[in-house]
Image (cartoon, rainbow, N blue to C red; front, side, top):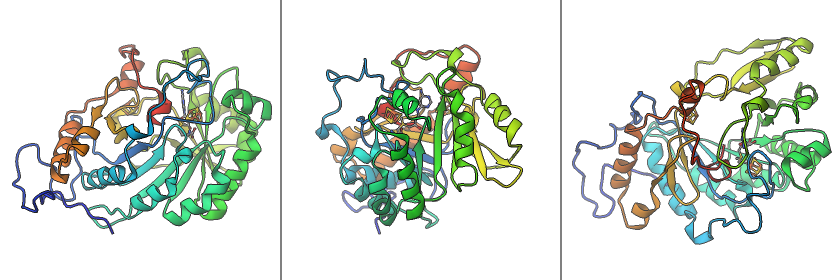
Amino acid sequence: MSKVIFLADHRNGAPASVAPGDPPPHGQPALDLRARPLRDLRISVTDRCNFRCTYCMPREVFDSSYSFMPHSALLSFEEISRLAGIFTQLGVEKIRLTGGEPLLRKHIENLVGMLAELRTPQGHPLDLTLTTNGSVLERKAAALKSAGLTRVTVSLDALDAAMFQGMSDSGFTPDDVLRGIDAAADAGLAPVKVNMVVRKGLNDGQILPMAERFRNSGHILRFIEYMDVGNSNGWNLAEVVPSQQVLDRIGAVYPLEPVESAEMGRVAERWRYVDGGGEIGVISSVTHAFCGGCTRARLSPEGKLYLCLFAHEGHDLRAPLRDGATDLELARILTGIWSARGDNYSELRGRNMADPSRKIEMSYIGG
Ligand code: SAM
Ligand code: SF4
Ligand code: SF4
């Protein structure tokens, strides 16, 4: 089992002294300026994708002349798992692999296997999940499960084939994704969460068919408000369907009741069908900011740490990593970055105070 004990200097084996800026005491999470603990880490393993979802990687921008990152720029699996081990010592209990399309990164199951060996300071394994467009999940699900993946989230915006192909701008079909979802459930990556981004006038007619398809399936369908991530999707508030409207539409046919959850950092509001047909979720990042409970850090494919989905700048971790920093030095860097965090973009957007310029792209940093 891989271990990270950063209060001993790994480079020379000497015990390190405790200094201002040192990581928090063993077992305590790092806290930011608003006392938000560091609990979740999203790791984007590639900026490439085999879809061109119009709201994420519009083909006009991400065409053949677009410069994706060269492989040499990407963090290796060893570098990712070393950093993840240090994050785990600073409070991270949950890791999500994302992208781009994470299943396009070669031998991703090897990375899953390395991350599955990590333990929290209390000795618990991590909640290790992955978000995928599902296109190649059918053939990868069993290997991901046996490598130690806990669960999977699959994006699916429509059941109607023409609409799906229009939104994903790909040759794949909803059936390809549905077979991936089934394979994941069969492999034991359950409950499978299914993410649907709702765009007014485009796929909002699919809300009820999607709800009906996933009722009584054991999978959890989650409706995501279309967000103003990145600078390339031409986002417009008029295209957002507020989650409350989604709940009203479904609830009018299949009555719903809220599921209470006290878990900090949870972004989805949970609802259940009164008749026992299962659960759905809504993610209301536009109409209901949840920055106050945001415990997420995001690591980009080439090792930049972002403190918010809407951040302008990342903090380079690859340079110290490749310059030979010890685990303790890296832990100090991470603690310093997290303890200076005050990010709250969605709250500011709600007050018309957000700066929408120069945001990172969703396909680079993951959802
Ligand atoms: N390629 C994988 C996938 O699509 O599941 C993982 C990366 S993708 C960037 C992660 C999630 O972000 C997906 O569920 C996607 O639907 C969501 N997403 C992308 N752009 C979005 C936007 N503008 N608003 C809301 N969600 C978005
Ligand atoms: Fe690719 Fe996911 Fe973005 Fe769609 S949402 S373009 S599948 S990264
Ligand atoms: Fe977290 Fe930023 Fe989203 Fe607020 S806007 S919830 S700080 S990622």
